[in-house]
Image (cartoon, rainbow, N blue to C red; front, side, top):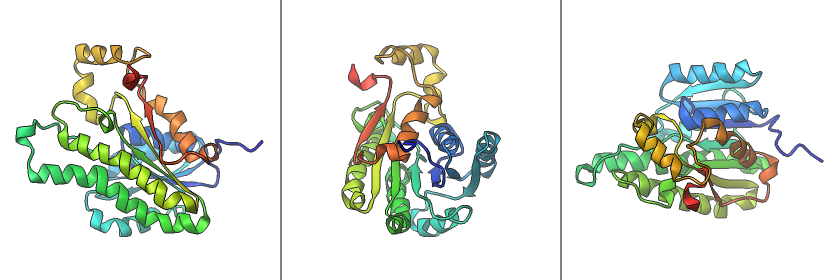
Length: 253
């Protein structure tokens, strides 16, 4: 039987790889054998991810780029291909949540959220698809959210963008899976990241959220490793257009 979870010989690009969910997924893909290119704005933080991957015997490189400038993503895709060749796997993990009350949302903050969370994943994926199509194999993994299905306070633009990510993932699958490029999304529950710092700094709130899960605890970043490797590996050859909730059963209750 072939090794269904082996990523040796594959190249993965992970946006938002400087911290949180992106960093966790980049580390997981590196441990499974992929050469990993992490992409974000902060070069110093990216360097730490590269060191962490290399410390476990993996290969990694960093590309510092402003992903909000999605008109320039074709050029960014060329930079990402420089260290190891064109990526076989793209994980769109970069994102923002400004947590504004509805009355404080401005056109600028709306556009910023939609651009980074929704437009950037599409345009970056589209820039990388031709090389994947030529190989006849590729994986695109988007990051959805609990807010792809549920509403939370002070997060209307974020929720709108993540609802869009879920539908975009299905549309990507319809467009590209016939060329061997599977497109899926991970919808994380509550994990300790920069975006959820305010939740985890409030112990009472974090405990209350943990109690809302079926498992009874909030996520640890390594809880994402298995699903990320699965969606990037041959094990998911017949899985596409899906949003997989890694939320401890939060949405099941």
